[in-house]
Structure formats: structure tokens, C-alpha cells
Image (cartoon, rainbow, N blue to C red; front, side, top):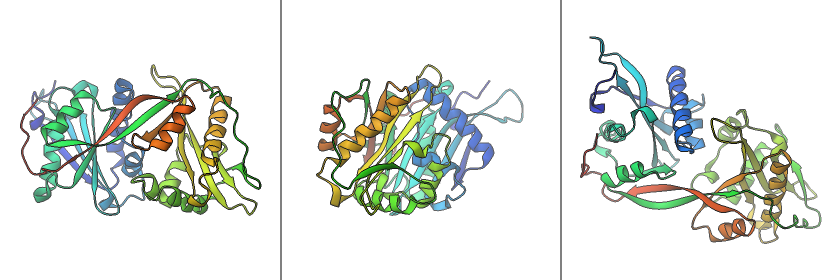
Length: 333
């Protein structure tokens, strides 16, 4: 049994990497939320920051709310009811992501988390923060509106359920595709990634530690990480694929995880060739469904993916606010 009001529940605040015990609770909450929603509540980079030993205190702030067990006089914390994580970029700008355990939804936990963020940040409050809603569920949109946040950016999740009806285009003379080699290609890939995504707010900022954290994940397989190189083995482009294992009622699926081409090699069809090469690889593993993320306003990318047969499956929305200080216009529990 828990106390009826989330505003009475204890809050834990952690700067930097969270302790192992709390991470275990967070992992269980995230799994329950994804099973319920069909979407991860946190971005991959935020998840990496939460558990990486290399995470610095200034890179992430975590606010956790535990439901309060009021069946005993001690009022001991019970389940992890909700989580807010604020990841800070190199410029100090913060991006918020929230996750609420399905058991504790529609009780005001989201409001409790936002109020806790405002309290922790003292005079700064919600100033300068943006917030992701993965799947843009109705409750998240309502919470954003309560605090004066409005949509700023839309990220589409697109899905392909059949092989594109076209052959993989031929590569330019001297260009070949090979697999990524751990211990050899890390710095070259980071350079190419920065160049290819110079104007991308997340992908272009990846560091060596971010790459190594992903390489340490169970899903990483260098055989599905393709590099396009010239005769001097200079990296021109890449297609990093990812396999999402089946979980709950959700089937395994492949992902066009990251496709990039350095500026000097763009305009030659290399991105299309790399994309199809990776899709063929994922299909060869028996994966019938392939997904990817792309910005809704990236018209060239959206057009290419539509031509390949991808359709919009879901949407993530980034919210921002021009009025960071006010109290919510509606209080919900």
C-alpha cells in the first residue's frame, strides 16, 4: 500500500552516474515502461550517461521518485515510481526525459518530477530546458502544455516491412564496403561522424567514451557496422545497423542505426548504397521489419526512405518553453 499523494513521496537526486542499486531499479522501470508503451522512455545517450563509469557530474542530473509505503510507522520507500533525467550538452543546455512506471501512472507522478526538477535547479527553475516525449503520448503532451512547453522538433520513427524493389547501386570506382574493426577504426569513425553530422544536435557530438559504451553493449556486432572506404582506406561513409531482440509481445527487428557520408563524398549515391547494403544484411539475419529514426524536416532523407518503402510508424517530439518560470496552470494527481 502506498501513500495516496505523490507530493508526499521521497525524491532522490543524483549528479552524474547513478549508483548500481538505483540503476537496477531504473532498468526495471524502463523495461516495464517500454513493454507498456512500445517505445523506450529514454534516449540511448541518456541511458549511457546514467550507467557509464566515465560520466561526469555536470553531464547528467537524475531525479527519482519512490512511492511511499505507509503500512508501517517508518514510511519506508517502496517502488521506483518515476524518473527524470536531464542530460547536459557541451554548451550546458539541458534536455529532460521522464519515465513513469505503468503501475503509478495517472496519479501525478509526472507533475511531482517536474516540480522536483524546478526545486533542485533553484533560481534556474525550468529555464533553458527542453524535453523529449518518446511516442508523444497524450499524458506527456498535457504535462508539457501545463508548464508552457510547446513542440519544437519532431523525430519520425519509420518502418520497412519488405525489401525495397531495387538493386543496391554500384559503388564509385575505388570504393568498397568493409566491416568496422574494433581497435583500428574508432578514431576514423568519430572523425567521419563529426563531419557527416556537423549540424546534428545529438549524433555529431559523440565522443570516444560514447562509442566505447555502445561497443560494450550486448547488441553491438562489428559485422553489422559497415564502412565505405576508398583505395587508401580513407573512410567516406558508414552504416551502423542494430538488432533489437524480441521482448514481451514485441518481435525482434532491425534498425538503420546510423548512416552518414562525409561532405566530400556526398552526392554520389553512397548514402543510398550503404543504406541498402545494411538493409540486406539485416534481412539476411531473418529480420522482416526494419526501422529507423529521422528528423521530420530532413526532406532529402525522408524522401529517400519513402522511396525505399519506409512509412511513418511513430513520432518523438522535442518540447521547449519561452516561459520557464511560471507555475503550472493546472495541477493534476
